[in-house]
Image (tube, rainbow, N blue to C red):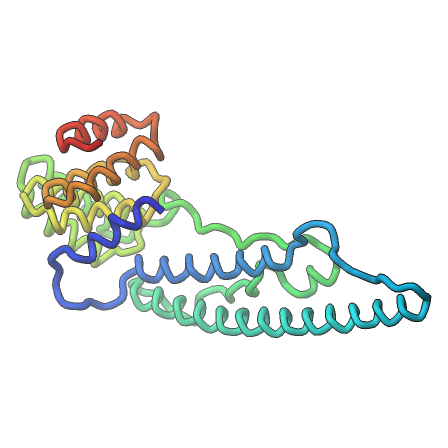
Length: 275
């Protein structure tokens, strides 16, 4: 992916000592698990016409050839079944561990009250045995549909007011406190984006780049995604990482050609002298 170079460059930015695992880290691990499962699904799909050879000049030779092919296919099926079972068991353990970590990061969360995880693969065994199609796991509800905690909106509004009044350092700290208190709230994506704006306005390019990256990674198709990617590109340019900045700014127009941020990204590329 074109943004891979940018993400690698961000690892070189000044940062504090290693911190505890964040929600973004956990989301990334869940994404890796999903990719592994998709790869297994592709392996189970047919790749075209069967390549089975049952040649022979006599009936007995053809029977021997068929029996040999059956043995080969049986062995291949057993190997694939063992591999899928191993991946499913390991994936189930890892998902349960991630559920526990997510619950620890969420205020007032009780692991025992969470619904039982969907069987790995997306459907119960009875549904598959009945010949029904495997339904995908339901997606999490959009942020706007989640219920806010008491005081959450008020704290967000206070931080946003500080930003609008030009108290950038105070706003950045207020949004950081908000994200610590409500890491999975419906306003967390907006808070991360506005934190990036406050840090950028305060001249803190490195933490601003990280905040914009978090905002984009948290919802790469959301309404804030184009502006977050634009902010990331500008911050990288201020840090002197011109190549990464040019790649990021070009990605704005590629991903969101109709967004107002696409035109601003093009202007920013011209200012940086991008080819």
